Length: 516
Image 1 (cartoon, helix red, strand yellow):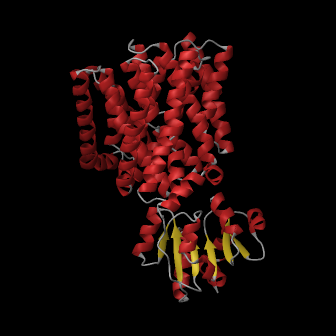
Image 2 (cartoon, one colour):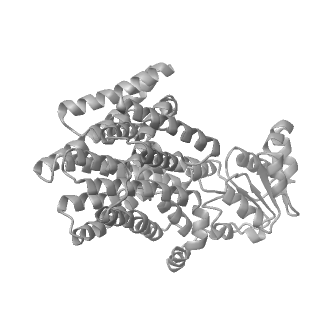
Image 3 (cartoon, one colour):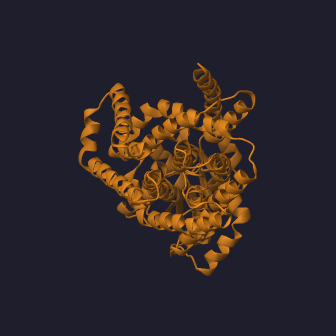
């Protein structure tokens, strides 16, 4: 009854937080953590660690299911470089530091890994709200987090078996399980998706798969988290999995409430040891890790802004490592100080990353000078266009493509700027001159020969892009979702059109009038 009362209280508060966050359009995770911390001040939540492991295990299954391997392949080379170097170099800094501070070998391993590996669940949920995962830095971040998930799953299984030959064997077995999951996905998952038609079957089949993975883990005495992740990967089909994810959304919210309110409830006033461990983890997660990611990307030829945005979405402590530490604590391998430090660090990085991700453009403008300086030293450039008296179309979405078709019919020189790989691939297929880059970077606009353009057309609603385009001293056409929004954008050199009016008046006819 005490456990049911605790869960009931967490769900009541968690439901309120989820409702408010969705209405306000803000990330829910920091709010759930804060709600759990407040509850624990007035009510003894008891032992939540085992329940949290259950929540993490389902969320890991959900992460595996939502993985888009087709999207991953497009940025795999960038992501592999970033992930492997970032984990190795951050670990190389944190492990000796933890040892130097007097922690034992196993404790140092967990501390260093916790600070080295980023979080997919928190990263992608914040991404969905703030940075758009269809943009290039979003795809790189998501793919990099996926690689780190694989690393974390194998390490968790190995560490749970101990630092011995058995641990090595368990790690190799886990790697083999993941390879089998990839193989099953390629051979059978498409057929499975066709067989499961109704929403009821989708829910029942996925819950059954999750339950089976937990049962098999118990039977074969392997990591439940590893098997849950592998089970999700087996049935992941990118965009084809959207319907499965939609019907599982309530369950995902259910376990998110358990995990993140429980995480908040476990936060306690830190003693000196907990505080010291937390500082080591936060140093790795919030300073060393983003610095390495940014430097690797700059050396690989990416711009400073893209490097900063990618690193700013990889600041969280991984839910995989949180699960690993909880399991190690319940098994008696780690003491309570390490558990408390990891719980505190996870909560702090969730709040910090939510803030940085939401305000990344503003933070970059104020603090990105060192990255911009390195960018200059490395002579980062975007390939220039030779067009003059041309039209620049920012965004090759449905509206952008319509503008381009009319420009072609009018035989007007034009080029497209877009930051989405998919949209640029469409431009290549359509044989449209294009620049792949973030319009927020001055180099991209300079490469488009903005000073000699007759007109700039922007179809994006992304606030930083809108503000950037609005401030340009060139004739331009911008799009707005509402008449009220249009009135705030219009000025002497800016014509604003409302999307709903374009549809009502006929898209093609309206565009023809605009570009004349």
